[in-house]
Length: 260
Image (cartoon, rainbow, N blue to C red; front, side, top):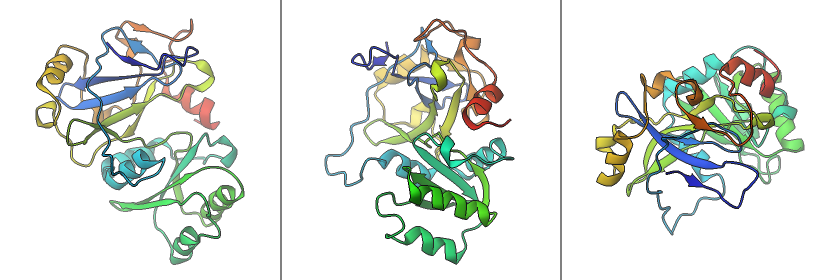
């Protein structure tokens, strides 16, 4: 059984879960047109604290605060080469930098320059990750600034580095998102790898959920090594539209970003 957004009759919009051979848990969000496996498992949702003081992009802030250094390295390797134009951004942009000069740090903290969208800055390993949400002149100026300075190693725009939490303690798990580009069934893309990876035995989810997950989908290998995944390659899946699933990550990246 999966959780479906039934008011959105134009799409699938489902959240489901699977484990890998190491026993790690991952959350998957189909968005409009991602493949939905027939054996997909739903678990009890994480309840956000009532006194939460974060605003709309709370999950992104949580993710960038805890994202693992090896995952940032994989993102940089995946998105190396030509860099995306601001017009290609679909909601938010993450930049991976080698360093953050004092001049640029001051630019990020200038409230007059960024009145509505505060950039998120986090040092992860030997990299600096900057998240910027929203559009407009300020976003375009920031995008141009870091590229003119030659600081950007990789742009990951269009994707949010999304944090997924489960259990009574809000444990972070691997999180995959689907871009729903052009209504096609693209591969899922790994958005977030937690700093501290736990198996389902160490997660604060119910015993019933653990039993359901073990009897559901078990993905070969480890989620750490699976940046992209098309479940339709090995599982019976349903789709929003009558379309053939696309397996190549390069096709996805080329469509979204115009390179690869």
